[in-house]
Image 1 (cartoon, rainbow, N blue to C red):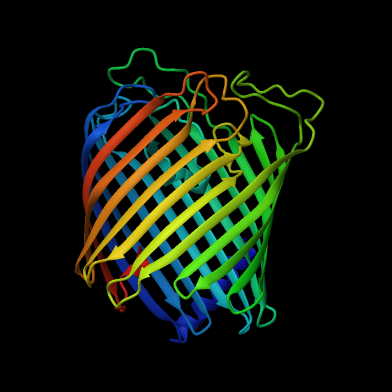
Image 2: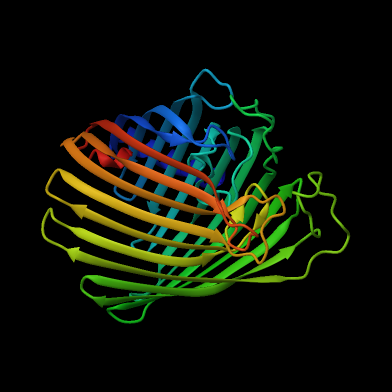
Length: 434
């Protein structure tokens, strides 16, 4: 990775000295307050709660005729009362990312993206630290401290007018830095925590895209991965999909995908729930084949200027890697969303989501393996550099659909309002920094 990024920085630095690079700088901040009802710890009853969050940040963008480099740094300070894990201070999380794009030729481009998070996150906001690898089961600790980083570098080549291929090397690393958390205030004897294993994943993403005609595109993604899990079970996984996208009419698009994930345990079965030390047997498990499928539909209901309205629907059967269990698990999900512009300054957004693990049997400890969420959001742009938003969030967790007694194990409801400000120098576009 340094062999790619450092020469890029050197090239941009040389161009900067020659005065051929545009430099954009920005500082930004988001403040949010929320009131609602949420459990103080996993598995406990919901109670009234208040929260406040501050996210200051800074961004730098360097652009030349053929290259661009963007750097972002964003700490997060989150305080909730009653607070989690007997902490009388805000939780602190640091996030940073860098992205680089260079056009080698009009048809060939190189890209590199690196991101990292370090700090504390509570069990209600796992997406802030886990990202696309969020656990399929709930945490046992109200607060965890973890470090994670993701990197991707590769090339995209427009071989012909109708054929494009991209090849990227990817890597990720994540580890829980503190497994032992304090007992939450007001709790009795919480369930024993299962520490997140240290995980290193490396692989390649190869995506071929064919334009069949003016309305149809065929995409063929292949994603081999090697997961090194300590303590746990090393795995090799290869996901292969075929995705067809069709423009049904000028305002409607349909996308259908199907494929499979081939998963092989390298060092045999290792049940982290039954044996936290994960003593591996000598014989490895046979190759497992997990089906994958997706269908998505998008329709522009209204395309008038400043009155755009878009409906989105999606259902999928995927095989995400669970960072808590150190294993790939089949997950079925559905999502519906509607975005609507009311005028130049006002916009609305509504999202409904649900997901459940599709294994034949639930986890032995009875963990919640089904989730649901709903969000209603209103945005008002006070000025080009200032945005005010408010809305409500609802989320719930429930047991596995095949559990002996299906029940809701966690429900939280929040009403919130927030203010985002961006001060960008030498640029009329303020959204690039966010």
